[in-house]
Image (cartoon, rainbow, N blue to C red; front, side, top):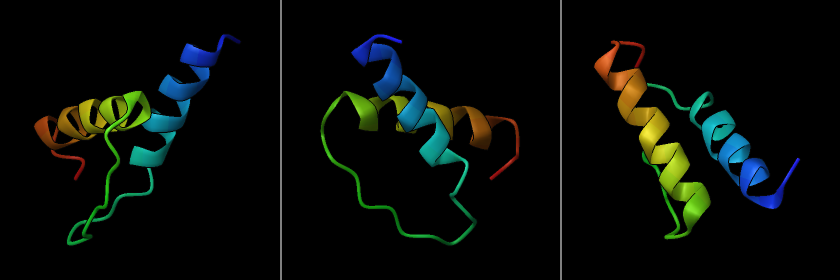
Length: 48
């Protein structure tokens, strides 16, 4: 697995741990980008 693929996987996996009402602290790197993108998908589909 390439480094960029690992970052994408890590960001998406981190989103699985988010619960309603949580306060998130994010960085500014590419891993945060993938997490935010996944969170958006989860919100859109009413999973969060």
